[in-house]
Image (tube, rainbow, N blue to C red; front, side, top):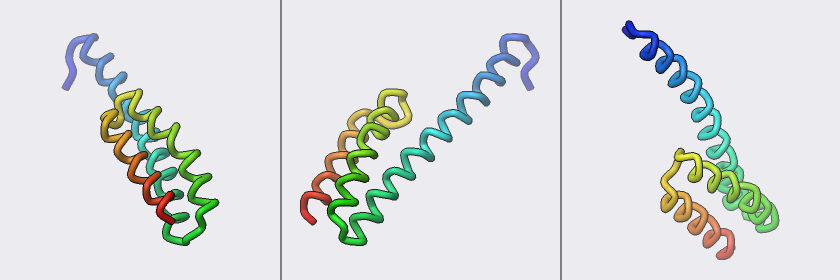
Length: 86
């Protein structure tokens, strides 16, 4: 249990930032799911559009520290390869 004022403030800040980060991660996952669904359905146009929407979200997540930048680049690269292979 936090006793000092600083520790109490830290608890509040952490809770607020955790909620924001959870929302951002959920948003990234939603965009990734849309790309995956378009790929599995076989619709190349929809997959291309979904990838175009997902890429900035993934990179924004990497910029804010939700994903490692190399992991984000790897995800985008692999999705782009799968879309191109369709």
